[in-house]
Image (cartoon, rainbow, N blue to C red; front, top):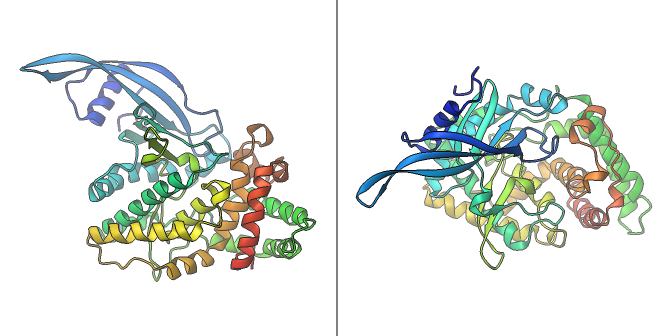
Length: 407
């Protein structure tokens, strides 16, 4: 491994660039502008750094070969600070999982669909745990504000990316049967820290107690249903991403929330390209893992619930078309199949929409780190302080009640 037991030096950076850019003429590498890509603790499963490398390389200019100066901008991912999240990623071998995805899976998926899906991978190591990727920002890619949510155009572009990723994974599985079974591990298990379940139950209890006094006719009924969920919450959560060989399965990204999508827009602000980031939670199971999390956390509030079927139809159309183009033998799911799988994993919708989404759109000053929440099992956050969160909950909860998700 490039990083194993070796100090960071310009020689190491030279090896990184030669490998990542496939150019053995690279020399004179100097690192510059190293800085944190986000505040400490903001990214739950890793610490992110941005840095630039200046270098020279040989290029053909006219009829001669000349050495020219260039610069490349990179992202370095390493383990977070000691705490619950560090324990979690080590217990679940998170860095090894993401390395497997970047080294052995994404290159094949991108060749299958003929387009780039993720940042370019330069190199990585499990000892010490580090991954170096291309920084997409200089190429015009940007995140959308998590408090704002995705517009209909951005949502459709993201859905397209998810569907193509899923379809390519089906083709991959047909060409290399069994390999993706490595990704059947659970993110929640009997070994999960008690604080995690305490935190989830704390939020549900808080919701149930508050909405009981709302004037909407559905509110008292929903409050009672939420309170009853507390009895079986743990057992339900353990079954969320269980693999079922009788279901249509894909390699799920596993963490489809808004900061894991970057878009490049045209002059009119419309998305023309999308990249998916962070492949630390990938799992081989029903595609509704990605769909439930995405639909409940990413679209802007005015799109939530009302456009779910429209987005699912777009997903199924892109999925089916891509699978057909890749000559997949596996049959794509129908809308009925997808909704059955969604109901089966309905607790994931509750977790995404009612527990994590209000955190995602909260002001930083109103919440503590997720690491701290999962350690102690409570939170200082008052969901109902944020009017946007309340607006979203008043769409999500009655919809979940009508679909039977609160049963």
